[in-house]
Image (cartoon, one colour):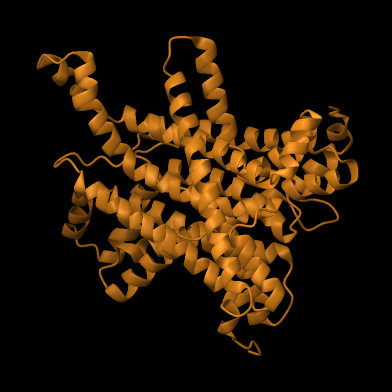
Length: 229
Length: 241
Protein backbone atom coordinates (compact mmCIF):
# COMPACT_ATOMS: atom_id res chain seq x y z
CA UNK A 1 0.00 0.00 0.00
CA UNK A 2 1.30 3.42 -0.91
CA UNK A 3 -0.80 6.47 -0.31
CA UNK A 4 1.84 8.67 -1.94
CA UNK A 5 -0.21 8.35 -5.12
CA UNK A 6 -2.99 10.31 -3.42
CA UNK A 7 -0.60 13.06 -2.33
CA UNK A 8 1.00 13.46 -5.77
CA UNK A 9 -2.39 13.60 -7.52
CA UNK A 10 -4.25 15.50 -4.82
CA UNK A 11 -4.56 18.65 -6.91
CA UNK A 12 -6.05 16.86 -9.91
CA UNK A 13 -8.47 14.82 -7.81
CA UNK A 14 -9.79 17.69 -5.72
CA UNK A 15 -9.52 20.78 -7.92
CA UNK A 16 -10.44 19.10 -11.21
CA UNK A 17 -12.50 16.16 -9.99
CA UNK A 18 -14.33 17.56 -6.99
CA UNK A 19 -14.57 21.30 -7.65
CA UNK A 20 -14.36 21.30 -11.46
CA UNK A 21 -11.58 23.74 -12.31
CA UNK A 22 -9.03 22.58 -14.88
CA UNK A 23 -8.69 21.31 -18.42
CA UNK A 24 -11.87 19.22 -18.36
CA UNK A 25 -15.41 20.48 -18.04
CA UNK A 26 -16.14 18.51 -14.92
CA UNK A 27 -16.46 18.58 -11.17
CA UNK A 28 -18.77 16.92 -8.68
CA UNK A 29 -19.94 20.20 -7.12
CA UNK A 30 -20.34 21.91 -10.48
CA UNK A 31 -22.91 19.28 -11.35
CA UNK A 32 -24.54 18.76 -7.97
CA UNK A 33 -25.32 22.37 -7.06
CA UNK A 34 -27.13 23.46 -10.28
CA UNK A 35 -28.89 20.06 -10.33
CA UNK A 36 -30.41 20.47 -6.87
CA UNK A 37 -31.49 24.08 -7.53
CA UNK A 38 -33.10 23.38 -10.91
CA UNK A 39 -34.48 20.03 -9.70
CA UNK A 40 -36.15 21.75 -6.77
CA UNK A 41 -37.79 24.36 -8.99
CA UNK A 42 -39.17 21.63 -11.23
CA UNK A 43 -40.03 19.61 -8.11
CA UNK A 44 -42.28 22.40 -6.80
CA UNK A 45 -44.41 22.11 -9.95
CA UNK A 46 -44.45 18.32 -9.75
CA UNK A 47 -45.40 18.42 -6.07
CA UNK A 48 -48.18 20.97 -6.65
CA UNK A 49 -49.35 18.95 -9.65
CA UNK A 50 -49.63 15.82 -7.49
CA UNK A 51 -52.00 17.72 -5.17
CA UNK A 52 -54.05 19.38 -7.90
CA UNK A 53 -57.76 18.69 -7.94
CA UNK A 54 -57.94 18.59 -11.76
CA UNK A 55 -57.21 15.04 -12.96
CA UNK A 56 -55.52 16.23 -16.17
CA UNK A 57 -52.79 17.80 -13.98
CA UNK A 58 -52.74 15.26 -11.17
CA UNK A 59 -52.50 12.11 -13.29
CA UNK A 60 -49.53 13.19 -15.45
CA UNK A 61 -47.70 14.46 -12.35
CA UNK A 62 -48.29 11.15 -10.57
CA UNK A 63 -47.19 9.26 -13.68
CA UNK A 64 -44.01 11.33 -13.80
CA UNK A 65 -43.14 10.49 -10.20
CA UNK A 66 -43.94 6.78 -10.59
CA UNK A 67 -42.02 6.52 -13.87
CA UNK A 68 -38.79 7.99 -12.53
CA UNK A 69 -39.00 6.35 -9.13
CA UNK A 70 -39.36 2.96 -10.80
CA UNK A 71 -36.37 3.41 -13.12
CA UNK A 72 -32.69 3.16 -12.20
CA UNK A 73 -30.89 6.51 -12.52
CA UNK A 74 -28.31 5.01 -14.86
CA UNK A 75 -31.12 4.12 -17.30
CA UNK A 76 -32.30 7.73 -17.26
CA UNK A 77 -28.76 8.94 -17.93
CA UNK A 78 -28.47 6.55 -20.88
CA UNK A 79 -31.82 7.78 -22.21
CA UNK A 80 -30.62 11.38 -22.25
CA UNK A 81 -27.23 10.31 -23.60
CA UNK A 82 -28.85 8.72 -26.66
CA UNK A 83 -32.02 10.78 -27.07
CA UNK A 84 -30.87 14.38 -26.67
CA UNK A 85 -28.46 14.29 -29.65
CA UNK A 86 -31.20 12.70 -31.79
CA UNK A 87 -33.76 15.32 -30.77
CA UNK A 88 -31.47 18.34 -30.92
CA UNK A 89 -29.42 17.05 -33.88
CA UNK A 90 -26.20 18.28 -32.32
CA UNK A 91 -23.71 16.34 -30.21
CA UNK A 92 -24.11 17.48 -26.62
CA UNK A 93 -21.28 17.70 -24.03
CA UNK A 94 -21.47 15.24 -21.13
CA UNK A 95 -22.09 18.10 -18.70
CA UNK A 96 -25.43 19.09 -20.24
CA UNK A 97 -26.55 15.49 -20.68
CA UNK A 98 -25.78 14.72 -17.05
CA UNK A 99 -27.33 17.95 -15.76
CA UNK A 100 -30.54 17.38 -17.73
CA UNK A 101 -30.79 13.78 -16.53
CA UNK A 102 -30.23 14.72 -12.88
CA UNK A 103 -32.70 17.62 -12.91
CA UNK A 104 -35.46 15.51 -14.48
CA UNK A 105 -34.75 12.47 -12.29
CA UNK A 106 -34.34 14.31 -8.98
CA UNK A 107 -37.45 16.39 -9.61
CA UNK A 108 -39.51 13.22 -9.11
CA UNK A 109 -38.04 12.72 -5.64
CA UNK A 110 -38.01 16.44 -4.80
CA UNK A 111 -41.64 16.64 -5.91
CA UNK A 112 -42.55 14.06 -3.28
CA UNK A 113 -40.72 16.12 -0.65
CA UNK A 114 -42.63 19.23 -1.73
CA UNK A 115 -45.91 17.34 -1.60
CA UNK A 116 -45.21 16.01 1.90
CA UNK A 117 -44.15 19.49 2.98
CA UNK A 118 -47.38 21.04 1.74
CA UNK A 119 -49.44 18.30 3.33
CA UNK A 120 -47.67 18.91 6.64
CA UNK A 121 -49.20 22.41 6.88
CA UNK A 122 -52.31 22.19 9.08
CA UNK A 123 -55.64 22.52 7.27
CA UNK A 124 -56.69 25.31 9.63
CA UNK A 125 -54.08 27.56 8.01
CA UNK A 126 -55.76 27.24 4.63
CA UNK A 127 -59.19 27.76 6.14
CA UNK A 128 -58.02 30.84 8.02
CA UNK A 129 -56.39 32.26 4.87
CA UNK A 130 -59.57 31.67 2.88
CA UNK A 131 -61.63 33.26 5.63
CA UNK A 132 -59.52 36.43 5.45
CA UNK A 133 -60.35 36.63 1.75
CA UNK A 134 -57.16 35.37 0.08
CA UNK A 135 -57.55 33.58 -3.25
CA UNK A 136 -56.30 30.01 -3.63
CA UNK A 137 -53.11 31.18 -5.37
CA UNK A 138 -52.45 33.84 -2.73
CA UNK A 139 -53.04 31.30 0.03
CA UNK A 140 -50.52 28.98 -1.55
CA UNK A 141 -47.91 31.70 -2.08
CA UNK A 142 -48.21 33.64 1.17
CA UNK A 143 -49.44 31.10 3.71
CA UNK A 144 -48.86 27.48 2.73
CA UNK A 145 -45.55 27.52 0.81
CA UNK A 146 -43.54 29.56 3.35
CA UNK A 147 -44.50 27.17 6.13
CA UNK A 148 -44.12 24.09 3.94
CA UNK A 149 -40.64 25.22 2.89
CA UNK A 150 -39.48 25.37 6.50
CA UNK A 151 -40.75 21.84 7.08
CA UNK A 152 -39.01 20.62 3.93
CA UNK A 153 -35.52 21.86 4.78
CA UNK A 154 -34.19 18.70 6.52
CA UNK A 155 -35.57 16.45 3.78
CA UNK A 156 -34.02 18.73 1.14
CA UNK A 157 -30.61 18.50 2.77
CA UNK A 158 -30.97 14.71 2.81
CA UNK A 159 -31.91 14.73 -0.86
CA UNK A 160 -28.87 16.87 -1.64
CA UNK A 161 -26.71 14.23 0.05
CA UNK A 162 -28.33 11.57 -2.13
CA UNK A 163 -27.77 13.72 -5.21
CA UNK A 164 -24.13 14.33 -4.35
CA UNK A 165 -23.60 10.56 -4.18
CA UNK A 166 -25.57 10.07 -7.39
CA UNK A 167 -23.39 12.48 -9.38
CA UNK A 168 -20.75 9.73 -9.37
CA UNK A 169 -22.92 8.05 -12.03
CA UNK A 170 -22.10 10.84 -14.48
CA UNK A 171 -18.62 9.31 -14.71
CA UNK A 172 -20.17 6.41 -16.64
CA UNK A 173 -20.82 8.64 -19.66
CA UNK A 174 -17.36 10.20 -19.31
CA UNK A 175 -18.06 13.31 -17.25
CA UNK A 176 -14.93 14.09 -15.20
CA UNK A 177 -16.19 14.19 -11.64
CA UNK A 178 -14.34 12.94 -8.57
CA UNK A 179 -14.97 9.28 -9.45
CA UNK A 180 -13.82 9.70 -13.05
CA UNK A 181 -10.77 11.66 -11.89
CA UNK A 182 -9.79 8.73 -9.67
CA UNK A 183 -10.27 6.36 -12.63
CA UNK A 184 -8.04 8.55 -14.81
CA UNK A 185 -5.30 8.61 -12.18
CA UNK A 186 -5.70 4.87 -11.61
CA UNK A 187 -5.24 4.09 -15.30
CA UNK A 188 -1.81 5.66 -15.08
CA UNK A 189 -0.74 4.62 -11.59
CA UNK A 190 -2.58 1.29 -11.03
CA UNK A 191 -3.28 1.98 -7.37
CA UNK A 192 -7.01 1.15 -7.15
CA UNK A 193 -7.18 0.38 -3.42
CA UNK A 194 -5.59 3.65 -2.31
CA UNK A 195 -7.38 5.85 -4.85
CA UNK A 196 -10.90 4.48 -4.40
CA UNK A 197 -10.53 4.46 -0.63
CA UNK A 198 -9.39 8.09 -0.77
CA UNK A 199 -12.38 9.27 -2.81
CA UNK A 200 -14.67 7.22 -0.56
CA UNK A 201 -13.34 9.25 2.38
CA UNK A 202 -13.80 12.53 0.48
CA UNK A 203 -17.43 11.66 -0.34
CA UNK A 204 -17.95 10.52 3.22
CA UNK A 205 -16.64 13.75 4.76
CA UNK A 206 -19.07 15.79 2.61
CA UNK A 207 -22.14 13.62 3.04
CA UNK A 208 -21.61 12.82 6.71
CA UNK A 209 -21.07 16.43 7.74
CA UNK A 210 -24.21 17.40 5.82
CA UNK A 211 -26.24 14.62 7.43
CA UNK A 212 -25.13 15.81 10.90
CA UNK A 213 -26.16 19.31 9.89
CA UNK A 214 -29.52 18.03 8.68
CA UNK A 215 -30.10 16.17 11.93
CA UNK A 216 -29.32 19.31 13.95
CA UNK A 217 -31.71 21.31 11.79
CA UNK A 218 -34.39 18.71 12.28
CA UNK A 219 -34.02 18.94 16.05
CA UNK A 220 -34.10 22.73 15.96
CA UNK A 221 -37.04 23.07 13.59
CA UNK A 222 -38.94 20.10 14.96
CA UNK A 223 -39.79 17.41 12.45
CA UNK A 224 -43.41 17.41 11.38
CA UNK A 225 -42.50 15.27 8.35
CA UNK A 226 -40.72 12.65 10.42
CA UNK A 227 -38.58 9.87 9.08
CA UNK A 228 -34.88 9.11 9.21
CA UNK A 229 -32.24 11.02 7.30
CA UNK B 1 -36.45 13.36 -37.21
CA UNK B 2 -34.43 10.87 -39.19
CA UNK B 3 -34.56 8.13 -36.58
CA UNK B 4 -36.07 4.93 -38.04
CA UNK B 5 -37.91 2.84 -35.47
CA UNK B 6 -37.47 -0.91 -35.73
CA UNK B 7 -38.96 -2.67 -32.74
CA UNK B 8 -38.22 -6.10 -34.17
CA UNK B 9 -34.61 -5.76 -32.98
CA UNK B 10 -35.94 -6.73 -29.57
CA UNK B 11 -36.84 -10.26 -30.64
CA UNK B 12 -34.64 -10.79 -33.70
CA UNK B 13 -31.32 -12.54 -33.27
CA UNK B 14 -30.11 -12.98 -29.74
CA UNK B 15 -31.83 -9.94 -28.22
CA UNK B 16 -34.66 -11.78 -26.49
CA UNK B 17 -32.25 -14.27 -25.01
CA UNK B 18 -29.96 -11.47 -23.82
CA UNK B 19 -32.83 -9.65 -22.14
CA UNK B 20 -33.97 -12.82 -20.42
CA UNK B 21 -30.46 -13.54 -19.18
CA UNK B 22 -30.21 -9.93 -18.02
CA UNK B 23 -33.43 -10.21 -16.01
CA UNK B 24 -32.24 -13.45 -14.41
CA UNK B 25 -28.83 -11.99 -13.51
CA UNK B 26 -30.44 -8.85 -12.09
CA UNK B 27 -32.79 -10.94 -9.95
CA UNK B 28 -29.99 -13.27 -8.88
CA UNK B 29 -27.53 -10.56 -7.83
CA UNK B 30 -30.32 -8.62 -6.12
CA UNK B 31 -31.60 -11.64 -4.21
CA UNK B 32 -28.15 -12.62 -2.93
CA UNK B 33 -27.30 -9.03 -2.06
CA UNK B 34 -30.66 -8.69 -0.30
CA UNK B 35 -29.87 -11.68 1.91
CA UNK B 36 -26.43 -10.26 2.75
CA UNK B 37 -27.88 -6.81 3.38
CA UNK B 38 -30.63 -8.17 5.64
CA UNK B 39 -28.13 -10.16 7.68
CA UNK B 40 -25.80 -7.16 8.01
CA UNK B 41 -28.71 -4.81 8.70
CA UNK B 42 -30.13 -6.91 11.53
CA UNK B 43 -26.67 -7.64 12.97
CA UNK B 44 -25.49 -4.03 12.94
CA UNK B 45 -28.86 -2.84 14.18
CA UNK B 46 -28.65 -5.25 17.12
CA UNK B 47 -25.00 -4.40 17.83
CA UNK B 48 -25.87 -0.71 18.08
CA UNK B 49 -28.02 -1.46 21.12
CA UNK B 50 -25.63 -3.74 23.10
CA UNK B 51 -24.05 -2.34 26.28
CA UNK B 52 -20.50 -2.91 24.95
CA UNK B 53 -19.03 0.33 23.63
CA UNK B 54 -16.45 -1.04 21.11
CA UNK B 55 -19.14 -3.12 19.40
CA UNK B 56 -21.50 -0.15 19.29
CA UNK B 57 -18.80 2.05 17.79
CA UNK B 58 -17.94 -0.59 15.20
CA UNK B 59 -21.58 -1.00 14.13
CA UNK B 60 -22.12 2.77 13.99
CA UNK B 61 -18.96 3.21 11.94
CA UNK B 62 -20.14 0.53 9.49
CA UNK B 63 -23.55 2.13 9.02
CA UNK B 64 -22.35 5.73 8.76
CA UNK B 65 -19.37 5.05 6.52
CA UNK B 66 -20.88 2.62 4.05
CA UNK B 67 -24.19 4.32 3.40
CA UNK B 68 -22.66 7.77 2.93
CA UNK B 69 -20.29 6.86 0.09
CA UNK B 70 -21.62 6.37 -3.49
CA UNK B 71 -22.34 2.77 -4.40
CA UNK B 72 -20.37 3.21 -7.64
CA UNK B 73 -17.21 3.94 -5.62
CA UNK B 74 -17.84 0.78 -3.60
CA UNK B 75 -18.24 -1.23 -6.81
CA UNK B 76 -14.80 -0.06 -8.02
CA UNK B 77 -13.29 -0.49 -4.57
CA UNK B 78 -14.45 -4.09 -4.10
CA UNK B 79 -13.75 -5.14 -7.68
CA UNK B 80 -10.50 -3.32 -8.53
CA UNK B 81 -9.12 -2.35 -5.13
CA UNK B 82 -9.54 -5.36 -2.85
CA UNK B 83 -8.79 -8.52 -4.92
CA UNK B 84 -5.08 -7.61 -5.54
CA UNK B 85 -4.58 -7.59 -1.77
CA UNK B 86 -5.96 -11.12 -1.34
CA UNK B 87 -3.70 -14.21 -1.29
CA UNK B 88 -2.86 -15.60 -4.74
CA UNK B 89 -5.00 -18.80 -4.55
CA UNK B 90 -8.06 -16.78 -3.48
CA UNK B 91 -7.51 -14.38 -6.39
CA UNK B 92 -7.21 -17.27 -8.85
CA UNK B 93 -10.36 -18.87 -7.53
CA UNK B 94 -12.28 -15.58 -7.71
CA UNK B 95 -11.27 -14.78 -11.26
CA UNK B 96 -12.18 -18.30 -12.39
CA UNK B 97 -15.62 -18.01 -10.80
CA UNK B 98 -16.94 -14.67 -12.07
CA UNK B 99 -15.17 -12.21 -9.75
CA UNK B 100 -17.26 -9.30 -11.08
CA UNK B 101 -20.50 -10.96 -10.00
CA UNK B 102 -19.24 -11.64 -6.47
CA UNK B 103 -17.64 -8.21 -6.09
CA UNK B 104 -20.82 -6.56 -7.37
CA UNK B 105 -23.02 -8.66 -5.08
CA UNK B 106 -20.77 -7.87 -2.13
CA UNK B 107 -20.68 -4.12 -2.86
CA UNK B 108 -24.47 -4.04 -3.23
CA UNK B 109 -25.07 -6.11 -0.09
CA UNK B 110 -22.66 -4.21 2.16
CA UNK B 111 -23.93 -0.81 0.98
CA UNK B 112 -27.59 -1.68 1.43
CA UNK B 113 -26.92 -3.50 4.71
CA UNK B 114 -25.98 -0.13 6.16
CA UNK B 115 -29.19 1.39 4.80
CA UNK B 116 -31.37 -1.52 5.96
CA UNK B 117 -29.89 -1.04 9.41
CA UNK B 118 -31.19 2.53 9.56
CA UNK B 119 -34.64 1.50 8.36
CA UNK B 120 -34.91 -1.25 10.96
CA UNK B 121 -33.66 1.02 13.73
CA UNK B 122 -36.08 3.85 12.97
CA UNK B 123 -38.91 1.33 12.70
CA UNK B 124 -38.26 0.00 16.18
CA UNK B 125 -37.74 3.49 17.59
CA UNK B 126 -41.08 4.64 16.25
CA UNK B 127 -43.00 2.18 18.45
CA UNK B 128 -44.55 4.31 21.19
CA UNK B 129 -43.13 3.70 24.68
CA UNK B 130 -46.68 3.37 25.94
CA UNK B 131 -46.92 0.02 24.14
CA UNK B 132 -44.19 -1.37 26.39
CA UNK B 133 -45.83 0.16 29.47
CA UNK B 134 -49.28 -1.11 28.56
CA UNK B 135 -47.90 -4.61 27.94
CA UNK B 136 -46.15 -4.59 31.32
CA UNK B 137 -49.23 -3.29 33.14
CA UNK B 138 -51.44 -6.06 31.76
CA UNK B 139 -49.04 -8.54 33.37
CA UNK B 140 -47.10 -9.77 30.33
CA UNK B 141 -43.51 -10.84 30.85
CA UNK B 142 -40.81 -9.12 28.77
CA UNK B 143 -40.60 -12.13 26.43
CA UNK B 144 -44.37 -12.19 26.00
CA UNK B 145 -44.50 -8.46 25.44
CA UNK B 146 -41.96 -8.77 22.64
CA UNK B 147 -43.58 -11.82 21.09
CA UNK B 148 -47.19 -10.63 21.27
CA UNK B 149 -46.94 -6.83 21.07
CA UNK B 150 -43.63 -5.33 20.04
CA UNK B 151 -42.48 -7.61 17.21
CA UNK B 152 -45.91 -7.79 15.50
CA UNK B 153 -46.06 -3.98 15.52
CA UNK B 154 -42.42 -3.53 14.50
CA UNK B 155 -42.77 -5.87 11.52
CA UNK B 156 -45.79 -3.97 10.27
CA UNK B 157 -44.05 -0.64 10.68
CA UNK B 158 -40.95 -1.86 8.86
CA UNK B 159 -42.67 -3.43 5.85
CA UNK B 160 -43.34 -0.21 3.85
CA UNK B 161 -39.87 1.36 4.22
CA UNK B 162 -38.20 -2.03 3.75
CA UNK B 163 -40.13 -2.54 0.52
CA UNK B 164 -38.90 0.87 -0.60
CA UNK B 165 -35.31 0.04 0.28
CA UNK B 166 -35.49 -3.39 -1.34
CA UNK B 167 -36.68 -1.79 -4.57
CA UNK B 168 -33.78 0.64 -4.31
CA UNK B 169 -31.46 -2.35 -4.06
CA UNK B 170 -33.02 -3.87 -7.17
CA UNK B 171 -32.62 -0.61 -9.10
CA UNK B 172 -29.09 -0.06 -7.80
CA UNK B 173 -28.03 -3.50 -9.03
CA UNK B 174 -27.87 -1.77 -12.44
CA UNK B 175 -24.58 -0.19 -11.33
CA UNK B 176 -22.94 -3.62 -11.52
CA UNK B 177 -22.74 -3.04 -15.28
CA UNK B 178 -19.77 -0.76 -14.64
CA UNK B 179 -17.65 -3.70 -13.48
CA UNK B 180 -18.88 -6.00 -16.24
CA UNK B 181 -21.76 -7.94 -14.67
CA UNK B 182 -24.13 -8.92 -17.50
CA UNK B 183 -27.32 -7.75 -15.77
CA UNK B 184 -30.34 -6.08 -17.36
CA UNK B 185 -28.82 -2.64 -18.03
CA UNK B 186 -25.69 -4.26 -19.43
CA UNK B 187 -27.76 -6.37 -21.82
CA UNK B 188 -29.77 -3.32 -22.85
CA UNK B 189 -26.53 -1.59 -23.77
CA UNK B 190 -25.40 -4.72 -25.60
CA UNK B 191 -28.53 -4.74 -27.78
CA UNK B 192 -27.94 -1.04 -28.48
CA UNK B 193 -24.32 -1.74 -29.45
CA UNK B 194 -25.22 -4.59 -31.81
CA UNK B 195 -28.27 -3.02 -33.45
CA UNK B 196 -27.65 0.74 -33.05
CA UNK B 197 -31.30 1.01 -31.97
CA UNK B 198 -30.95 2.95 -28.74
CA UNK B 199 -34.58 3.96 -28.22
CA UNK B 200 -35.98 0.44 -28.66
CA UNK B 201 -33.35 -1.14 -26.41
CA UNK B 202 -33.73 1.48 -23.65
CA UNK B 203 -37.53 1.25 -23.80
CA UNK B 204 -37.35 -2.49 -23.26
CA UNK B 205 -34.95 -2.13 -20.33
CA UNK B 206 -36.92 0.69 -18.71
CA UNK B 207 -40.23 -1.14 -19.06
CA UNK B 208 -38.79 -4.29 -17.48
CA UNK B 209 -37.49 -2.33 -14.48
CA UNK B 210 -40.83 -0.54 -14.15
CA UNK B 211 -42.78 -3.80 -14.28
CA UNK B 212 -40.49 -5.40 -11.69
CA UNK B 213 -40.68 -2.39 -9.36
CA UNK B 214 -44.40 -1.66 -9.69
CA UNK B 215 -45.19 -5.39 -9.47
CA UNK B 216 -43.27 -5.88 -6.24
CA UNK B 217 -44.62 -2.61 -4.82
CA UNK B 218 -48.24 -3.55 -5.49
CA UNK B 219 -47.81 -7.01 -3.97
CA UNK B 220 -46.25 -5.47 -0.87
CA UNK B 221 -48.99 -2.82 -0.67
CA UNK B 222 -51.50 -5.65 -0.56
CA UNK B 223 -49.50 -7.38 2.18
CA UNK B 224 -49.41 -4.09 4.08
CA UNK B 225 -53.18 -3.60 3.84
CA UNK B 226 -53.87 -7.22 4.74
CA UNK B 227 -51.91 -6.96 7.99
CA UNK B 228 -52.62 -3.33 8.88
CA UNK B 229 -53.67 -2.58 12.46
CA UNK B 230 -56.70 -0.26 12.39
CA UNK B 231 -55.88 3.13 13.90
CA UNK B 232 -52.13 2.58 13.83
CA UNK B 233 -50.86 4.26 10.72
CA UNK B 234 -47.33 5.45 11.33
CA UNK B 235 -45.40 5.29 8.11
CA UNK B 236 -41.71 5.52 8.83
CA UNK B 237 -38.93 6.17 6.38
CA UNK B 238 -38.96 8.32 3.33
CA UNK B 239 -38.52 7.60 -0.33
CA UNK B 240 -34.91 7.72 -1.35
CA UNK B 241 -33.03 5.91 -4.00
